[in-house]
View 1 (spheres, rainbow, N blue to C red):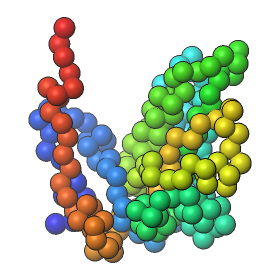
View 2 (view 1 turned 180 degrees about the vertical axis):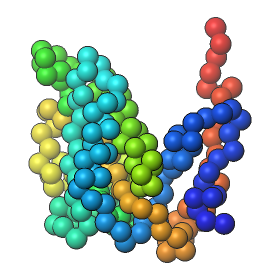
View 3 (view 1 turned 90 degrees about the vertical axis):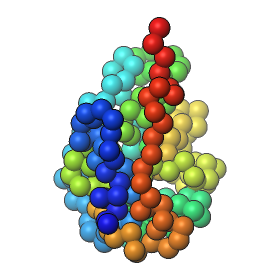
Length: 194
């Protein structure tokens, strides 16, 4: 069974296929993602919901083989770097801490960045591109490597993007994780009817 077959969940309710198709892959094919396709992914993020339509996100991205990509990979913790360095594109997502319109603190900025990241991944999956958001990185290295003004911006996560490859290309324990069925909490565990 391939990783995509294994990762396609059986849902209790009729969830839209564009949602169930998205999952956090680790095995990436040696296949480039075009600039036009990247522009499509980023345009999709512009349609994400955000407080006061501020769209407080910024995305830095780099292609495998570039110096910027190597800097991104160097910021990742070992457990992510070992497989993420094979992705054709790496993205660093950031949230602006204040509103453009008045300079006040935007306490929803990270929430809005999360919505934009998810929208990017849903659009990517629609194009058979898979992404893996990573919180396992060295914050200080990322701030320094990309000269992030931490007064103005907060780093959200790194995202590895690529077309799927065979899980057999991964070493353990990543191969087993790639092939493990997806699980989710029952909706009764996180909802309460009032």
